[in-house]
Length: 304
Image: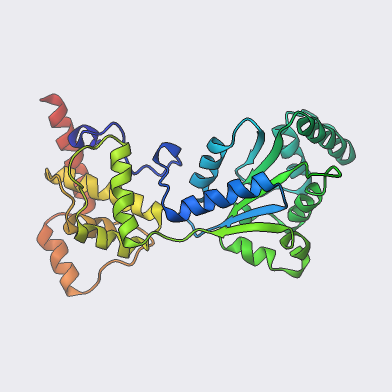
C-alpha cells in the first residue's frame, strides 16, 4: 500500500519468515553458530527455545539456507504427530514412498536409506519446528530414531525449535533419556531498545528504503516498551505506524503514530489513564479511520 510513498520495493514488516530480512544480531548469530558447530560435531540433539515471536522459524529457515551440500535436510514444520505419523513423515522427507508399510518395514527402509546417504558423504539433519507440540510418545519415538547409528557416527542429527514449554516437557521424568542427549542448546532473547532501532532500520533498508531513519528515538522507545522486544510484535507495530503516517501524509514516524498502533494491537499493554485518552482524541482519528484514509490517499495518488 505505502511502498511507492516510501520508495521501497516491498512491505518491510511482513510476518512471513522471509530470510532476505534475517536480522543477524548478536543473539541470533550466537544461536546460528551453536547450530552449525553442533551439526559439524555430529553429537546428540540440538535445542533452540524462545518465546512466541522471537524468530525461531526465521532462524530455522536461515539454517536451512546455510547448510551446504554435505547435509541432507529434512524439515517438519508441524510435529503434532503420532509415532507412526512421525516415522512416515521422516520416510517421506528421505524420499521413501511406503504408505502401506508396517512399522517394522518402514524402520528397516529408513535405516537403509540413512546408511545410503551416510555412505555418500552427507549428514542427515532433521529440523522440527514448534517442537513444544510433540506428544510425549512421539518424543520417545524420536529418541529411538536417534539411536540409528554406525560404529563411528550417528546417522540422524536432530534439531528442535520450540517455545519455553518444550523445556517443561523435557523436564518430565519420562523424558529424561532424551533430555540427556541434548548436547547443545540456546535460548533466544527479546531485542533490547538499541537492537529494536537497528532491526526497524534493517528491514526498511532491505526493502529498499534509502533515506534518513524513519523511526525516531521516542517512537522506538514506545515500540520497544509495548512489544517487549519481540520481533513479531515489532513488525506489527512498525507496519501499522507506517500506515498511519502514510494516511496522514507524514513521512517520519512520530510517537503519536506508534501510540495509536499500540492501542489497536491485541496482546499489548496500552497506555492508560486520562492523559492517554486526551492524546488519542486530540490526534483526532483512530487507526481504522486512518486505514481508510490511507487507502483513499493511495487510490488518489495512483490516479494522479
